[in-house]
Image 1 (tube, rainbow over the protein chains, first blue to last red):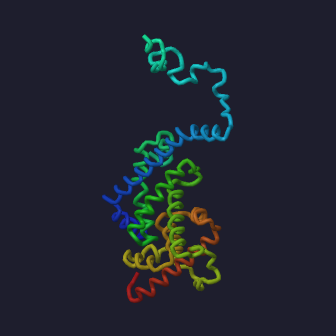
Image 2 (image 1 turned 180 degrees about the vertical axis):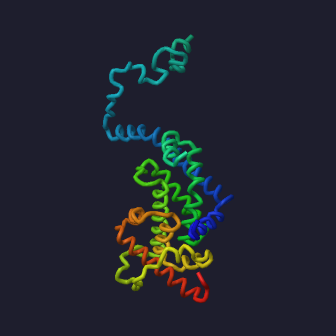
Image 3 (image 1 turned 135 degrees about the vertical axis):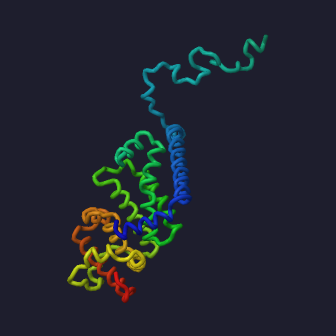
Length: 98
Length: 185
């Protein structure tokens, strides 16, 4: 080991312990924020693009959904029969009149 | 586990264990270079954090053309050099110094003179050198980088690096002679 490397070791000792852990924690927080922002973008960006396109009067090309059963594209309340399919009945429905 | 294996594993799994491994291996070295060049502990800590952020955000771009350590050091040196450049508003720490550089003695200063310089003297000498000289000496003698790698990091030709190294060594000896006239090496 030469003196340049000894100098490096001396500087490294200044960093060991609390300072090293503090920087590590800070980095993990930063990466956590990046990950969260990335996930938000993943989830909301396609939906936002859809809103922008439709607000400008465009049509969303829904090629991916062609050929799929219609019910798969509907919200649960309008889809296939399953518990909770319809949600609350509209006013004036037979149940209310009874 | 080799660096390349840790990197592959991190890219696949994003496991914090891989991050901890790389952080453990390189953080003190990065900090040491930062404090040598920036000469301020707080700045060096901030720099270490930013350099690690850069490294991990660009990890997928590491092409394994060079060693991972060389890639890490190149990010570190370039960060510090850019920082100092911005601070001093200096155009280029490694600008072509050929015209303004002092005459370099015919006889090249031998590596031995620098490597065997007393630690306390070496510290003072490095502190009194221009940052560009300091960086190039650290790359060569602390990191053991090849001229080719230094040239790649600084985006210069190999012959330019050889000349800069020769000048940096000459200046180091000059500073040492001025500051420690009476003391032996």
